[in-house]
Length: 252
Ligand code: ATP
Image (tube, rainbow, N blue to C red; front, side):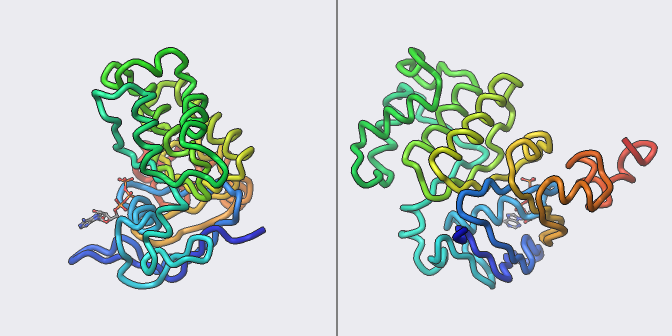
């Protein structure tokens, strides 16, 4: 399978902080790949470099063969990015928001903006509420709209920062369902970061664990749980990052 993302010796330094140190990994086309790690591990830094919002201090990242730092315009045409703290324009209805965004993104060959918007409306699952102003939406409804915006153009790579962050069980289940099923059908490659290990285990083909800017481990959820003799990814996380001492009694 073709390589969607190639990361080699990628580092990002701020004055006194090493946000990311010498990260190398590949993501295959069609994969749902998760980045996990404690707060400050370098997850958002990695996503921001890949989405051209940050430039690396050293090393490189390529998306479908194009260097993200050398040709950011071309990268932006082929990817979509859902930041953790994204919002929709409050005065627009959900439909108007998707129409507005369709004017800014790359429309797939052979499709019209209207077709892309209709696909987006379908992804939201908002039905008649799509014509309400987004300021009247709950957090879960807004997130569904934003996920639809990120996926409606069938980008080659969707980068999703905490896709179901802060959602109740029902909305989170819906959003994960979209990612798992829709993305597979469309052949979209997904890179996501999450603090929810249940979500990562459910969604991701492979996972990498970062801590303090360093790659600690990488593999399928099954490989990692076997390697750490863990019952689930949460235990892998605790064991691999040495966080168990923070748990009263030292264990869950
Ligand atoms: P979280 O799970 O809390 O969102 P993260 O894994 O996404 O964390 P990053 O946001 O990538 O972590 O941050 C990695 C490190 O880089 C942290 O120590 C953070 O304080 C630092 N950092 C991020 N942005 C800047 C900045 N603009 N200036 C200085 N340091 C920064």
